[in-house]
Amino acid sequence: MSDSFQDALAGLAAIVGDKHVIASGPEQDPYVTDWRGRYHGRAVAVVKPGSTAEVASVVRYCAEKRLAIVPQGGNTGMCGAATPDDAACNVVIRLDRMRALRDVSPLANTITVEAGCILADVQAAARDVDRYFPLSLGAEGSCQIGGNISTNAGGTAVLRYGPTRDLVLGLEVVLPDGRVFNGLRALRKDNTGYALKQLFIGAEGTLGIITAAVLKLFAQPRSSALALLKLRSAGRALEIMARLRGAVGDRLGSLEIMSRSQIEVIAATVPDVTIPFALTTPWYLIVELTDTLAGVDLNEPLAAVLADAMEAGLAEDAILASNLAQAKAIWAVRHSVSEGNKRSGYVVSHDSVVPLERQAAFVTNVEARIKSAVPHANVVMHGHIGDGNIHVIALIDRARCQDPKAAAALVAQINEIVDDETAAQGGAISAEHGVGITNRGRLARVADPLDIELMRGIKQLLDPHGLMNPGKIFGVGAA
Image (cartoon, rainbow, N blue to C red):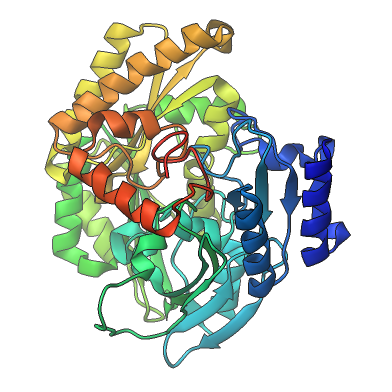
């Protein structure tokens, strides 16, 4: 290691302590490799500050030494946004030590937490005061709230509560020069100029490092009902959704769809998950109703809608969960999609969102086009059909992807099909996973040039030297 890198390690250790700096070597591997094992980078150091003041000092030091900064949460992202590139001058900043619950107010329905808090711990802290934090996704046991905010995570409750952006009231952010933006206000109404906090939500760590957040809480759901429906087409799910909204209104909390091929992948690769229903149709829909009043019988209105749907030929069969264990078993299938796909082959993943009315055409067209162009691909789908977000996944035999150039060409071919069909249906290429490394070329291809120009201008204003998470969203060298 060069003297300059040794000096950098010493300088960083002087800020956070020797034991909180990981130099290059095997101990760094989990921090310089993304969750899917797709991207591998290098770093001078992985640094774990213990306070906002230490984060600010580390960032100021990196800015002075022109060291690139890669903020990283739980490293559970799908697009490589938290993975350093192979340049030697990267510093990965992890907030694992910053897990304090700073404040919770049942009166205001708010919770203030540091960015290193695990999502499941935020949910538990809300439950401790008889409140509910609705963000929920498969990685909630390891992902960190700072990363969730930085990627504007979606999850299974968007239909009722919105994405992460809708759950954030205030932010504390360390800017690329080490100054601290103190927007940590628990105000429901604040019309004093630009909503600056919104710049950092979904920015994937390219504009600053989120160190704390004020989040919205809600009344705890006290009654629920869940059913699994077997469908002949995805379009029928939308007709069922319309009937549900007419019958139960905002009690419709989640509407999740999976293709049969997706469930078959889970059955074959995730042995600790049992499929608690027979696979007899092409599509499977999870419907969950919730109410904040205890003792409300939601099974009755749900059963009535399901009966009408079956009589109308919209559903082939329906399973109404009779107890909590059965409901958890059904949700376990849905939450295993990423793990199952990762184990099944080389994953070409997409995060398209299209208008609700066009989802049926989207899934039909995109599957046909991929299978026509790449017959050996196993096309699986799952997603949040209630908010227009369908994940189209092409699983490729890893033996076909040994040659990097051939793999890249195959991925590009599939991406173009999905992106073109997404655009044809009036959609966007990323609903909740972000851009990162995976989608930056696709964004450049499909985005409105004015959108890119404005985003680059914001990036240049806040990070003129391009040190904050370089190579993400815009590509290498973009400031």
